[in-house]
Image 1: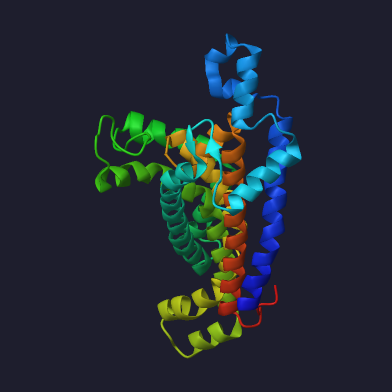
Image 2 (image 1 turned 90 degrees about the vertical axis):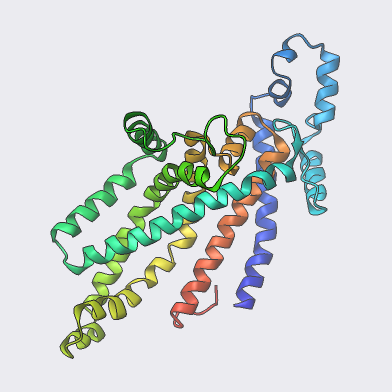
Length: 321
């Protein structure tokens, strides 16, 4: 495990370097002017000298390689630069928002894992039955539904029509203090939508894994010995059937990050995802590079955790990756 973690860490260093360079290259090739985004309407009446000075202050007048190298060397010393769109250090921008994104993603992932496992087991118990058909049909429908469409749909239903849950934000309008009750009530809809985007994969994988395990000899032997069906299902088939689910953690991280960006934007959730959209539209070089590096690190970490869990759960897999 230590060797695998060490190899993956060494591999992550050049990957992060290439990714951040690509961000600066794409941003510099973008038709959007970061100075215009920073100055807003004031840029229309500003002189060329003032605009040139503003470009120098923001550091966007540098060539691609020197600009990227200056940001990279500063980042290695803990200085991620200053966000032009947020008007504060990038470290502060990330520090203020990453906790809310982690909360949203963690709750959504837990909901998808528990819900997908329960529905997958119930579907595998009686293949072709009513529960199986309903669960698999729901999985395929949710898989095809875009996250932003689901978000708008639940806002219309639960906020506008029924009025039982808030439509967005972190707290109620006009609230001066952030309370746990308000955060939890505002978390329900975005977490449910984000969980729904991951739910199909867990349902289908658990259904397939448990269904295959029920046909294996150890499970048949347990049934032949007269063990209760619940014990056979939960104690034998589920343990074996959940092994393929562990491999889902790594591949699901990129989709979870993408879904978080869309969900946070729809529900005005003050996390990293919504900030990424602002950084991209404003061509905020330092903030965009830091957020992209953070997302890349999360994907690499997710794949590492997935491989480690697979190796621990099944010794045949090993830790050679």
